[in-house]
Each structure stands twice: as C-alpha cells, then as structure tokens.
Length: 249
Image (cartoon, rainbow, N blue to C red):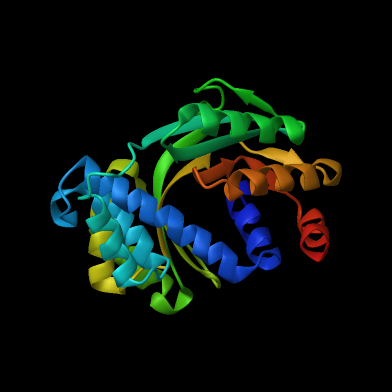
C-alpha cells in the first residue's frame, strides 16, 4: 500500500471524525471559491471548478456549502489566494509533496518549514522530489458500484488509463488533464464516486522502519492540520507488521 493511502487510513482510524470532516469541508470550499474566481462560476465552463465540485460531492459536502463557496467568489473582499507547492524529505529519506492555497506565501512557507524542522525532516526547493511522483487523476468507487468487469468496461469507455479492483472497491487512474471529463463519464454509468482527486502518485517508494514511522506520521499530520495546506503526499511503504503497530498505538 502506498504511503498516501496508508497515512489516510491511519488518520481516519485515530482522528476525531467530526473535526476532520469540518476541516476537510473548509479546504474543499476554499478550492471551489478560488476555482470559481479564476474563471467563470459555471462548472460546465470552468474545468478547475468542475473538478473541485466533483471532489466536494464525492466527499458528501452539502450542496448548500458548495453553492455558498461559488457565490463567495463573486464578492469583492475575497483574499487573493495562490497555489503553492512545497517539496522535502521526511525522516528515512521519504519524499513529501505539499499543495497549499495561501494568501500569504511567507506565513505558509514558515509554517511548513517549521514542521519539517520539528520532526527531523528537510524542506527542499520546488522540484526536489516531484520526479519521484506522477501527477495523475484518481477516482475511487465502493465495491457495490459493480463487478470488476463492469467497472473496467465503464473506465475504458470513459478514457481512463488503469483500473485496480479488489474486495475493498475500485481505483481508477487517468491523466491529470482528463480527470474532470473521465469522472463525469463514469458518474453517468456508475453513479457518484467515493472520491475524485488529482494526486501525486509515487513512481519510486521508500520502505519505512518502525523507528521512523511515528515521526513521519506526526510530520504528515502536522502538515495536514494547517489551514493553508490542501493536500499532502508521500512515497513511503510500510510493512503490515509496522502498520498494525501504528494503528494500535
């Protein structure tokens, strides 16, 4: 299991669900507002906004929240947010990519740097680790969406690149540029997705020993907790034995 998915699984088991969902909705709303401000407020005419709305719907964000976030973009007092990517290394040489939306680059950069320092990591320059990842689209469905054959056929028709199905569900991969259109086509045949995301997928993973695993998890959790940080990705690989110890701790 790749690091990003492992991290999410552990956080979901250990975190307070209501607080996590509230923070997630706030971050999704910010992306919707920024996307709506960057172009037209019509998702059909604005690919970035369409993708943001699809992701919010997949996370069961209420329709009213989505509409409020879009309308907020029409207000004149909205801060000017910019997308910033940070890259660095966690303990054990694990590569980390952080995506942020910020109205103060110095503030956000200072927070990210302090988190890396606190947990014995190193913040690098943009491009330092991104060559270890592919920027792709990922759409997930629960197992109940259909059989492996049904989902594969729908994914091929929608223009996806790959499908992995198991007892837990279906993970569909596609190009970053085609994520919005592929997700829309899949929704017509399979219904609403469990998640629709643009991710940084590791093409090179780093095994993690138990002595570094806790520090890595704390570093990633601290980054995720910052209001300006939208997404965090890492390329670590944890064995089943270490995974069990982390989730039991």
